[in-house]
Image (cartoon, rainbow, N blue to C red; front, side, top):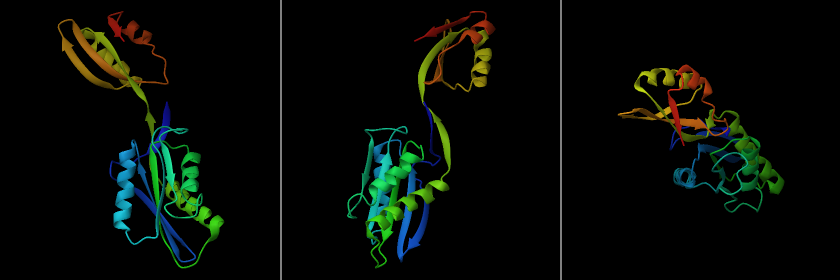
Length: 204
């Protein structure tokens, strides 16, 4: 499976902010490959903006369309006016492994439930509009054995296919290469077998 994820290093976040009716909304977005990564973002937001009125949030830990490793919180705002609108923006963007915290400093004027929902959704949308991202390719380990003379040719072909070699073990009978094969691509090594004249063994 291939999908977009935030192009951010662990512990980093992308931010944007705007103001409506003197209420300030600050959105932080991070890459969340697991729940602790998102929880770390939320903890940092609460620490750095400890005087804010609310720290509302949503996350998708996993690929787009994930139904289990997801969550959202209104953090004291009226039910359904903050966490869910943020989550809907994340879901609609087709991103995976993403978390978002929207920090609100109350400006003294109530926005109403509709106004709140629009403001939180806008905050998340603005952050995603400028969010750097890259494609994540889910991979599974695949093992092949080639003789020493065929290693360079095998590596060259794998590079052409954008298949990384994650490990190489040198043994008496040749080289055992561990590959990161894309899970959405059928395993077809026949072109490589032709190049190596059959001097290749696929090990499951």
